Length: 150
Image 1 (tube, rainbow, N blue to C red):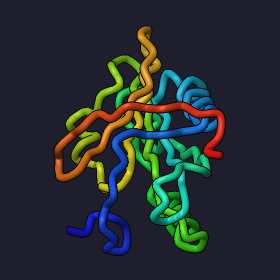
Image 2 (cartoon, helix red, strand yellow; image 1 turned 90 degrees about the vertical axis):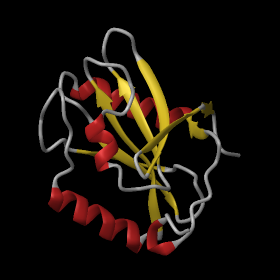
Image 3 (cartoon, one colour; image 1 turned 90 degrees about the horizontal axis):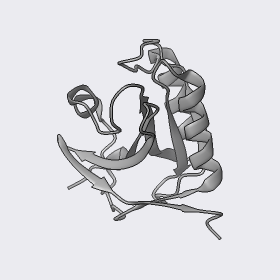
């Protein structure tokens, strides 16, 4: 059954593999926006499943308990992804006072079934976790940080 963008089937890896550089960029964005939630994506070539291009977004809600992509920015982002033959490989955001686990709102807004959903907790107990969210079902996956994909 298709679940990828443009009707492509989803081929899930069993773990998120991410470079140290991208990991550090996501964490830095989460810490810089604290106490508000940070959000963004990491794009990669369509069908590759490889996160390559870090794209921090503005949390239009500017809230410590909720994030929201600005609709104009989101439209611009998806046009850019189409132009580059890319897709969201990671959709990330931070939780500022709770564990890095998808909330009911996060689950209801998860509309990229082929993406890894990364949550970073900037609370006292720092966490970086990745999940698959498909049809409301949440599955945690291991995260492997590598120096490069080579």
